[in-house]
Length: 199
Image 1 (tube, one colour):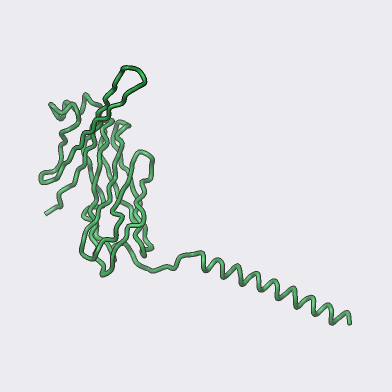
Image 2 (spheres, one colour; image 1 turned 120 degrees about the horizontal axis):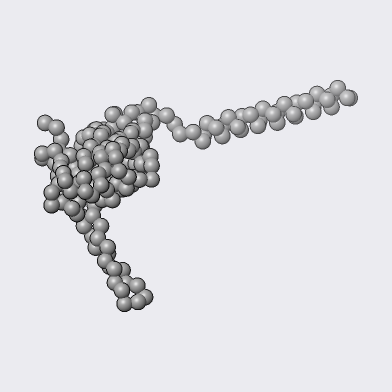
């Protein structure tokens, strides 16, 4: 009788042990996304993966616009476009991009620190295993050095860019009223550069 009870207990323990192992295996299998094997080049073409913003004025944010074209036969979705540091802000086309159509990814650098910079953003597309890295670079100059290179551009509104490029500067004014009689107006400018494609 002891042998039968011992055998029955061993069978119950073995069954419980294997059931836990199978549950863990099933849990791991369902928690990992399926690998599609697609690469970014299979679905998207970047007009440029690196944009040089050139020499920019300190404290005047500069924005690079990356143009992406859907080269697949299905709508393209940009899932994420994340900068690798806090000095850069990223944004991107949120709607699906139809086959053959274009979308944009922007990277705005705050230009707080002087000297040359190179900043990266990681871009993830839906259904693509590969994470793509894009780059902005340039050099931040103090206001005096910038003014020497761009006479008459003390406000940062003029930039040296390649011929055929599209440059857009937006200046905004914010008026702040305090509890007293004092009113303060703060002007900020942001420059956007779209580099012309190479012929």
